[in-house]
Amino acid sequence: HCRDKPLAPDVDLDAIASRAIGFSGASLQNLMNEAAIVAARREKEVITFDEIDFAIDRLQVGMQKPSTQGFQNKDAARKRQELVAWHEAGHAVMAALTPGDDPVAKVT
Image (cartoon, rainbow, N blue to C red; front, side, top):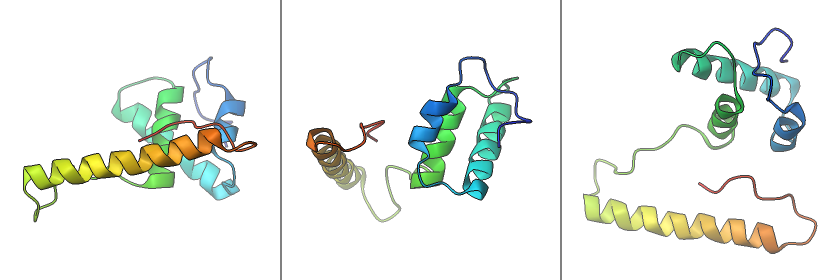
């Protein structure tokens, strides 16, 4: 799925594969197409790990949500964001402390 894509020389396909466990062939193709689009938007000639990492997040988690929703004031939005951050940190700690679990790649 990377054959016709201009990858930076330091792109480690093994590292990408470890983050894309369970992706179908179509999902891998979509991942690399998304990474190519991101690279083009950033006016890059090659796809780097940063673009692939961004594409993985977009495919696994979805689009980045705005920090405030129309019905929330800024204080309520900040409190909700802090609550979500603590929740996600809990997932990361549990994954890090669980023997045999995959290493934590990123906490968002």
